Image 1 (cartoon, rainbow, N blue to C red):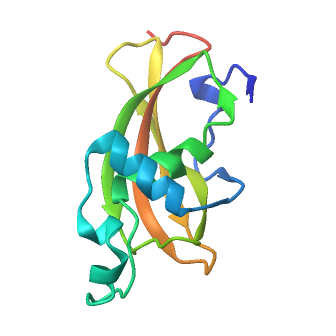
Image 2 (image 1 turned 30 degrees about the vertical axis):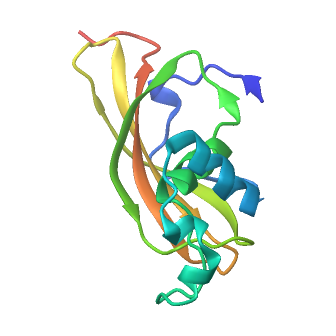
Length: 150
């Protein structure tokens, strides 16, 4: 991890980056359940899950979001900050032992309300070891401009 100043003008639509992978563990399930209070049997009860369509415990969608987005956090950019996420979808289940990585594509740039900033949208796909998209979201950034437009 390092600091790097990336201004609105530096973002290029369709630029793409891919993160390293991370294997999801049973410990991840337990820790996330403890943090959130979500102890639903879909995530925590292996025997009950054997009777369900997926046949095994499925990861909390919020956990996959948190871990997947965490994988993208490799550069500290003092010129931009996150405004949040839109269009978040849990596309496919993730299981213990699956390895996920993130692919981030700059999908949109536009003016912001304040002229010294621009809005950047990063389309994020979380992908498993089989190449299947398991989660998608659009990350909205507010990035400083190198020069203010008037």
